[in-house]
Image 1 (tube, rainbow, N blue to C red):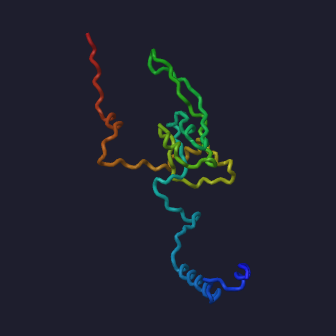
Image 2 (image 1 turned 90 degrees about the vertical axis):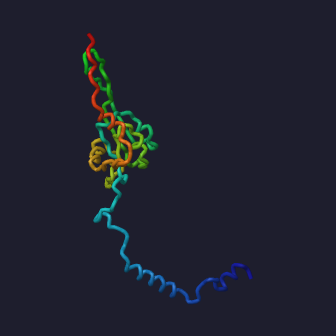
Length: 191
């Protein structure tokens, strides 16, 4: 007798002799037991999910802090941040002083269809222009509409939670210490 004929003729070891009915009854009992328990899911569109206070949903832009240094754009592994700027000459503030140049932000856009939400751009920004907002409802019908310009990114800034409070037993930050120092006395004129 070949192996193929042997496997067809004899019942499998481990198969129940009662057939399909005991397994079906066990399944129905389990289903009936679970039906009485409360569910853990929420009906998302009808009930908003609970999110931790500093959850990371979307990247918001504080435009007045952006100096167009391009660090976020250069460090982005997906290259999904687009920045355009130009230089503007500022007149001297004092007589005999020299004119200054500053970058003016023309365009700041993030393509959320490419973004992998790693947060490197938020971490690398030296001027705190980029922040995590807990907003997560910005789905679009067309994938091309996921390219958000600076106006849309700025609309999410009011939803950014304030930073956590400092530890009361920690040392005072250097910036606050320097700001609280009394002003220096003006040097006396020499005769």
